[in-house]
Length: 435
Ligand code: ACO
Image (cartoon, rainbow, N blue to C red; front, side, top):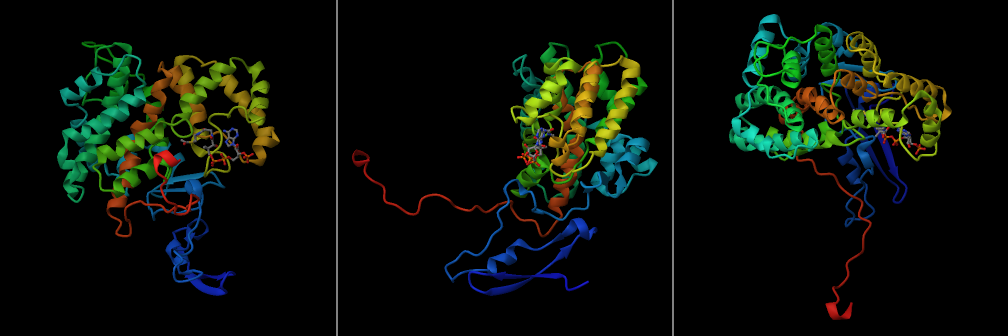
């Protein structure tokens, strides 16, 4: 192998620069040059210097990270080096959250301590309940979550001290504990149901289920298969490296905002249908298609670019999303308990046709994590506007892991991209009567 550098010649001037290549753990996916080095390429002293143009950051590494690894060509996803398939099979969500945040899987005793500190923080300040009461009955639950996360920052002003490691740990536990309660209260509010308070004796997911489906004064016993399915779904959604919402979390965090404000921004980014709102969009699409007979017609509309095949495609995965494989299997386990969701037949037919069709094959479009998750949530009796919220709950641990990594990274600076200015050159203001 030759030298670890690039030699770049500027054909405008004949200037040549040599730029070092930096490698990550996997050179094939982690070779990058420092973008700032290009600034040495100038046509004259006045010139600002060369930049790269990369809308949507399709080929720009914004950080060095040790949290999550994705090989999009081979459909590989690992948290801290552990394959997602093994984590989904052997772990529960809080164990995986601990892994993301601390880099190692917990021992039983550290898991017990960690779980207890999350449970201790599940309760909401009564004023947060009053805040949620202010939302209209038909407010989208994701909008309620975004609003309530932002509001939480006003309850914990010490969270603004992001240099205090103890405070960072405390607010990490608070956020993971409280996000599920806010989500459940939002759901109960939109249904006009009384709030069910968190139960510290239950697992994270069993507690989530009792807050959603329980009745006041009646003990709630979740079905173990459904509880396990929710654990698996939460593990699969916990992190996905530098996606739109994680980058938003890091972007807001880079301005040194408190984690509640940063997370409100991350949740807002997740809300969009191209990101975490896709599970809701998939369900609406499947309902609109209505029957297997209508699938070929819908595929034709997609190919004419009139509509999107929701839940298909991914910026990084260019083969099957490994999370979708696990979710599809989980769906059948859930149907054993709930009965089959008839929308699964439409989803399977869409997938079958799409995976044989050149439009999708040539563009590497495969089902992503959101294609099957909504079908499971619907079978469990949850309304569509809860699906992005159920994505945000476990993603909280990933957002916080990314945020904490940012705080400890001495190379990170405030996020501030450049632009290629395409507007007018300097001109004089004409007086209003002369325009
Ligand atoms: N249906 C139909 N065509 C699609 C789809 C889709 N779902 N996704 C991409 N394409 C087409 C594009 O039109 C484009 O075609 P062209 O080459 O003829 O112009 C080509 O495939 C490449 O697509 P891009 O939009 O350039 O891909 P990008 O990486 O920018 O977008 C995204 C990725 C946003 C996920 C896109 O695939 C999409 O909109 N999918 C549907 C929404 C969705 O499921 N989002 C969830 C993603 S997973 C997550 O965030 C949790």
